[in-house]
Image 1 (tube, helix red, strand yellow):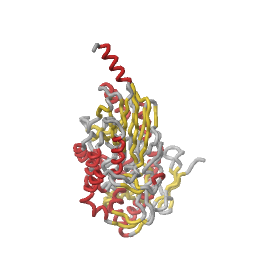
Image 2 (cartoon, one colour):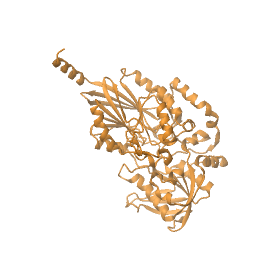
Image 3 (cartoon, one colour):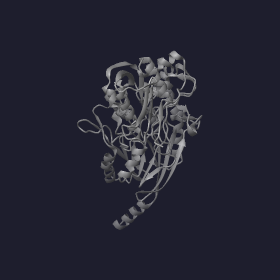
Image 4 (cartoon, one colour):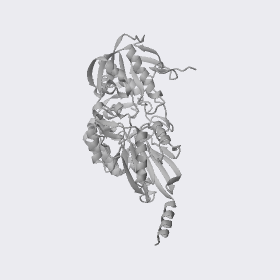
Length: 509
């Protein structure tokens, strides 16, 4: 064949349209088994379960041409349930290996068993676990692979992993010591051109940044075709599009399987079709069901032991979001209850807990140990200390700043949760003037008085930017958070969701 004929044939091959199907999950948070929906269109339905998720994956693979599917996970996957804690994430990795994932990115909760344990889980995974922006201090060596390039439907597809830059503010210091988490935009600007130079025709950013930060990434970095994201738990029924980039997420806790079908010609996406598949069908993948049952067997008695009863639904606020980014400003019934348990057990005047976004609701009826542990998975220690009223007010101001800031790189956590304290705030006011009235035990907060305060170890270390807790005096360890809450419920026998009346939002209008 002449060189001219070869060039013509190659050009024709490039211009021929091809299809890629991206299947994706995110923020599974260790939920191998299904759970009962309590909010929105999932209310009352049996949701999730990796055996049922796998059945939908098999169906999708069977309906597409060979070598045309990528199965990706966008992080916060291997921890945050009792079975995950008991196996240090192995149960989830083994299940994902059997399902046949192609890649995942490191989420901010992946290091919660320590970086060394995460490194062991990465070695056990039969798929690459990516993060281009995690390096070791001080030598700058990468913690794990930054990207891969795969041949899919006869095309070279680059997959770049971007972890959550604020991970050190969301995990115990010991878990991430000597690791540096770089800024996402700068990292992508370095690696996307490298992927293109190495022959990637399509570039996918597999991120654990949150939808707001994904939008910023799409706006500021050229050359990203698709962002498969996580962290903010959005159920995107349609992809968000910014410039040339499509952005998708798929809920949380295995609620959905995301599917994005791409038609590509001459190295660009010419059409796409989005499907968000709720995992509410009863049909499981029996092979995966057997894997999960085998993982559970050694811990079954411990996990199913009842610790009390719930008289009402007890839910954590804002665990699954909708199509668009949202402020995480809600008071959480579950965390109000846990804060009450901590305050009463430690005989403190005030208790604070961080605003979290993972974990499924406790349903009315018997509370098995595993269901409570799934809402308090980390081995957090409760600390007591004394803070002045002025310092407590600064803590509350930081809480409002954490979710109102327009700088997506500074957003971290949600509304702080409280017991023994009521406050109102105006998000439209100037910074450090947003908190309005504050009362402790029904009395106005006194700036110079010192109050006894209980917090978990994440806050005690200054997590979620709460540096004022590090300045508390008379700091003492008081016990493990999970055991403290568990014992408190056992003593009562039955608990209910408290009324969410401790935090009041006011307006200038």
